[in-house]
Image 1: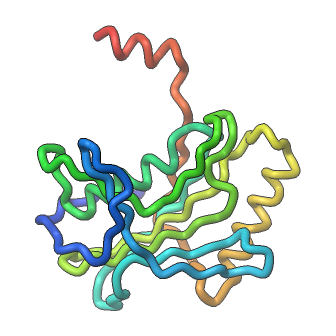
Image 2: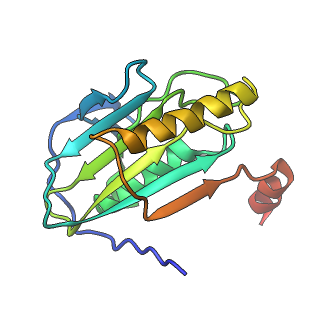
Length: 181
């Protein structure tokens, strides 16, 4: 069995940021180096920070249904890795979401986010996939699988993964039951 544990890091000094919302909480986008890894622009890599080969890197593949919150989970993991505390009223994002209905996938490409915080003992690579079971049908699901293969074959891609995270949207009845408690 594989156990994957993140330890909250002390407050880290951050590189370039772009203010995207005054808040509260104030929201910032981490400025990344961006690279397209295939000919059709469907496999992309965004890198924040400088790679340090002496640090342990963990690679997580996120898979799930459209609207399950994979993109939100990515930003939450980034904030945790950066040591952000709720009281600070700040939120950092590495993703860029488009204004779309939640029944449509917010992610249309395979996105590989590499995060190399300066003062952290680990680095993290998160692979975000477009939602499976998308309203665009089986052909879209097959395209996602082909694009994942491209990521694994690219010289700038990945060769292995440490964890697969399957995210599923909770049922509305479960959400309302939780809110009542």
